[in-house]
Amino acid sequence: MKKSTNIDNRLYPIASMIIMTLLWQIIVDFYDVPNYILPSPADIMAALVRDHSLILSHTKITLYESFVGFGFSIVLSFILAIIMDSFEVIKKAFYPILVISQTIPTIAIAPLFIIWFGFGTLPKIVVVIMVCLFPIVISLVDGLEKIDRDFLRLFEAMKATKLQTFFHLKLPYALINLFSGLKIAATYMIMSAVVGEWLGGDKGIGVYMVRAKNAYALDKVFASILVIVLLSIITIYIIDFIGRKLIHWK
Image 1 (cartoon, rainbow, N blue to C red):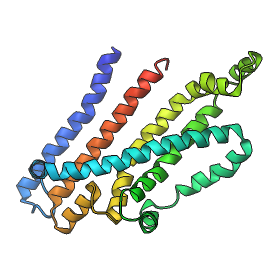
Image 2 (image 1 turned 180 degrees about the vertical axis):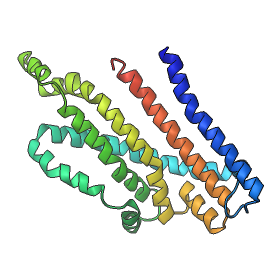
Image 3 (image 1 turned 90 degrees about the horizontal axis):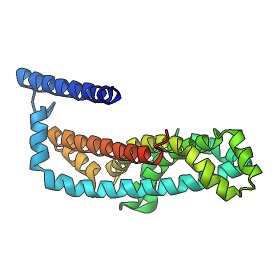
Image 4 (image 1 turned 90 degrees about the vertical axis):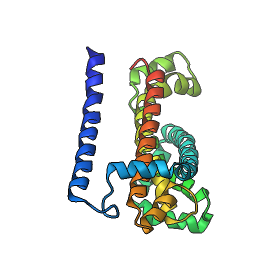
């Protein structure tokens, strides 16, 4: 019963997307909308096939920036979360700063990173770290806070060290929150790298989008958007799959 329900839940969005795509194609064909105003799904797929080698080469750069930044943000999040969980004073000092950092528009601060770090991949990686760090840290800290105090007292009674308590109680308990934060961060990961590429660079899917937009080749712009959406969805599904395997007791 549960399996059939899950299948139904997946079929609804797929069916909706198919219907919207067909309506989009019909409207564009019926009203003869110019390609430079709104390309049809068929035009977008044709551009994707025609430019697949160029899009692939740019996508590799964006994926490198995204996953390197994502990896660094996970490591930094663990370090910050452990420190904040161990020292209440540091948590009170850094928590508001983390919140304030999310009020700064990425598109406003990204040019500063380009000025400081150049036009290579480093400023884009820094942008990804800045965007992904907050949801992962906050989710992990909240997960570490929600541990049942009776469990902590049990570990104290068993003379467990702080390290043993963290690895055998706190971290497993916080994994559910951690993977929620990872999935949120994954939705921003590729997008933040693309924003960095928009503002400066010579490689990446964001650079490809800017060049296509300047040439009024909207079919190529939509093709690159499709690639970004698909990569983000695949990344989220991979994280969700790993999460289900690691927290199977959920």
